[in-house]
Length: 276
Image (cartoon, rainbow, N blue to C red; front, side, top):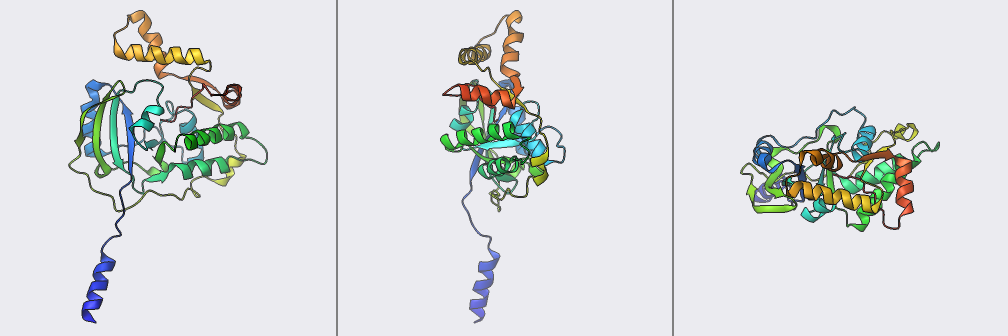
């Protein structure tokens, strides 16, 4: 009996084992500064930029629709291919492999919940809801490229959850990954319950219906992508550099209503919501 109790105690004292789920976070930065970013992340982790308002629903919409001007969250993608799919240019920066712990919420659950809460009996956010619903549809078609989202309730990526990092130069991973010696497998799992993230009163509020997009015309979009690629691959005259930088770094802003109208006009939507 004594041995049985001892064995039972040991079983209860051992934490439940589970497979580590990986996510991939891309941080755009020049190749010259890549090592600095890697060292800082290995030592201090990664935190979303920007100042949250305290209203998760409003913050998430601001981030989701205008991530460049509202960098309030971090998305972890399924793999490197999913990161590349989300970018309109050849990305240059650092790719981090991170273990998804309870600082992350399951991306599908978050998006599902946000679609539900933006339904309004007074119709104040129908255009907003359509943007998010269409994005969720694209995620389904792409096999859910985003695995987890952090930034809610002070969430961030702790340094011990970062396993490795690659330098990325114009869309290409450079060499072998750099391993984080401080990495520890997390004892917690990514959270899939997003039901309490968004205040139900959000359905009655009018969200700012601005969306960051690339050019609506397919040929303008193709030209903008080509310009960004040329800008990253060879030096340009100073007279052209500012225009190309503006095309790469500052997407067009339009209303959600106009965004949806342009999207429906094309069988294959040429306007891409920037999800990273």
